[in-house]
Image (tube, rainbow, N blue to C red):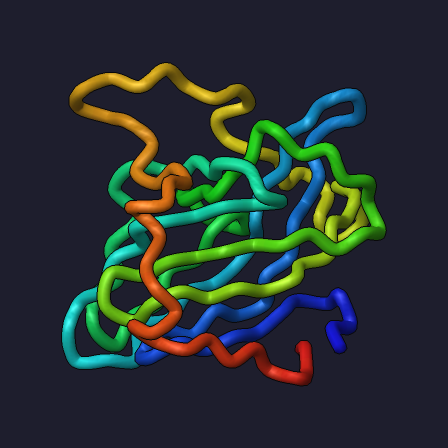
Length: 163
């Protein structure tokens, strides 16, 4: 059971910490995933697939690679973003999130949607609207059957506790 105060999961050498989905401004279908991704391995890994609430996710180009023994923060106190522009879920509900890593495999978690108030005030998707893809800078992960890493590559194991 998730408390909603950040979801944890581990797949291979990748740890997903404190995942929470912060809804965008009222009247929009945007949201940003606040999360820290830690690579505890000895080799780099990369985020190659992301889906939020069964829709495509946009990841800030250049932020999808995780160096060995390093972490990257997304959405909070960061220049890195994992956004959705198609969220139809209300705050207070849980939505499925899938994050696929080249080597570690696929993480499937259920993440609470929270309003951008209190601790989450000021957190919103950046960019505010889905950018047009260009050859030099395009969203690095969009869902497709061929892009999704198999769960066999690394079985996800969400933590039963949240912090």
